[in-house]
Length: 415
Ligand SMILES: [Zn+2]
Image (cartoon, rainbow, N blue to C red):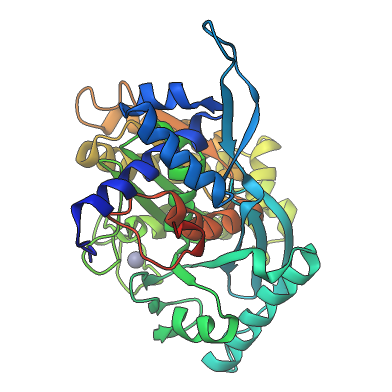
């Protein structure tokens, strides 16, 4: 929901401040004159805004730039240590917890065991404990922490701070932000984990240069986040981006969601493993069978990849087929959204070129005429740091996003 402000003058002041802050973040160290030129604002307006930002400690002077005659201008940059944020990714058995600075650099990271089985209250208690622990371990005072961002897989209503549905935790309509805010006395933002990665790319990664891009993750499932016209897109109920459950052949393999033929039932890591086990059982893959014994028990994606690296043709074919399917799916997205950039991440990209080569080929073959030509595809493996930074970016994005879309909770923005 958009929060409309009363008073145009306040809003214009906020918009100017946002413009200046983002220029300093993305282009700093930068002089006031350069900011005025790029933002098309008067030097007096820029000086007023930077005075407030300096007073709040969000930016700092760093040396002097080249003079074009007269005094050398002072250069300004974001002070990454003006505040810190906790980012937390919830997985089935672990909490990956990181403290980052305002530039999304991970200052300290820890993982904690996690179990949702004893119930929601116990799960939230251990989450709050993990957040306090990572802050204490970092040696940075809790008073320097401006908020907490949480990413988890499932359908998350970020606006309300509620997990609508999470398959891995077995949660339906569980309040997350409010009970944690009570425990921690800090603003707590929550979103789908792939959305958090997308927001991190938007503010701190490759997405800074693009207004139209998609993030596709492959791992246990297949997820997607999208930025359209420079805005992160959530859909009507926060459920947009369930790319893994788009149907590719309605009589295909059974998916975890109960339907048949979902993309992830063809192409995610468990699907690759399932196809490899079936190949072993049919006696088609001596390379895989040697690694595993006849039944195929204990097979993992890593073993399939090492069989492929060892020259096993069946393993290579399976990885190529699943990569190609993923590429067909991405080609459909390219035809719908016409993005400038697709970032492919997640644990599954460690299958490497065996899958990624065919994926690129499928995008070229199947995207609508011309749409794949200028398309940039970036492969970015997402480890623990990336997920935790992503979660932190939920809060950091609030600092840098336009006031028209922002909530009011972040204390650093008080003028
Ligand atoms: Zn499905």
